[in-house]
Image 1: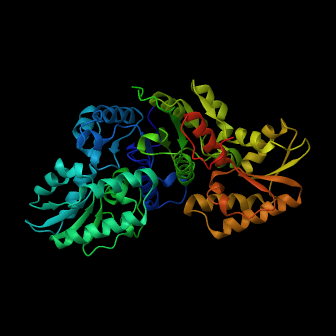
Image 2: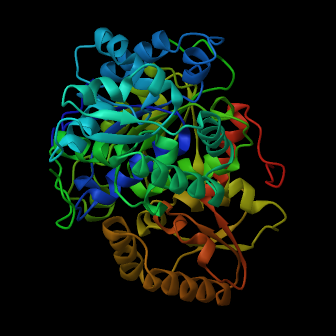
Image 3: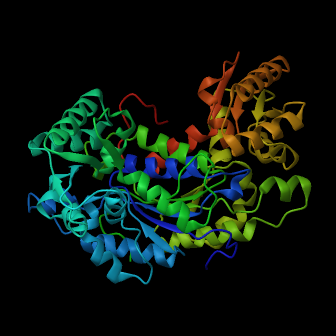
Length: 244
Length: 244
């Protein structure tokens, strides 16, 4: 049942966490690809599954069911459908990456790991990177563990409740000016704490990453994943877009 | 491997014809759904396959390979992944609907058929509906056959070459003011020929359907498909959106 066209390698997307973030990823992949006709775009199989149990409820509130087995099932289905690599536009869900990887024979383009490698370029040991992401990624050391390999420390916003409320608000009704203002305030505060760069580490925040004014460089994890997808697929990127 | 959440029925999308039209469908389904959190959105499997052989090359130019078997394979994979119904945001590709339906045990929400039923409401026998769509749908009678069941005739733009060039331009680089101007001119011409309503019957044209000023009612086939998807899934539509 595998596609025989073989022009590009097919990407499997573990999506729906949330829906808008997944659509944003697809839109950016589309916008990044140089195309003369339909045929030049990247083939993807997208499992848009908004019913994956809440990562935050499971990890922080310790109340909800484990999303791990659901994500592993999604990965298996995507592999069966012909996907040659997996991508997941939700940083927090990468806390279940090992469960996903163990269930299939194809690789996962690990978004937070790739972003940490990219942000570390040109930074010296002992430097600090600010992280605008779910507090679940702080508690579990998702970004911290990857960055510690480069001798880089992380700083998170002090007020976790505001960050969490903003993520939930965006999932419910899309981003607003209040969310942009919050992220600008927090990026500034992190820079004052010594952060030399800031990572947008939540795909809900990626929806407004281009609107944020920051005193230091802001790296959007979703952009890192888009570049990894285009490179892996073998498609041609537009001339004005940098693929590292 | 089927999902056990069972909150909503799962939709399988035969996508990528083109990519932007498929993204537009997904965006409209998302915007139509009333949601408090991720979990309230509709689960979908999207086979974004831009490498489906050109429908126009096969049907009009008689040069390209048959897209039918590729579409049938996509349908089978979507059913295997757990889709409970199929939808395809490309009107012209519905010329292969019987091949798709014969390959699976689930139904296809037939976009042009549903749109013809909807447009016929309140119209009398002998009336004319204008069709802004690929000439392939004229030659093959795609809309004409469905509308003839209601005793309704179709009218197509005289200048097929302009319509075809516009579809190709939108697939390549997105819609522009020239495409909007063309459709406005053609909608007006169709109304002068006696068309009481106009159908937007090409999902590339759906990308600009909201921008078109027309002397008669314009029905966008993609909107019809969005409503059919929300209704089938069992999700709640936003209060201000009409689901017939």
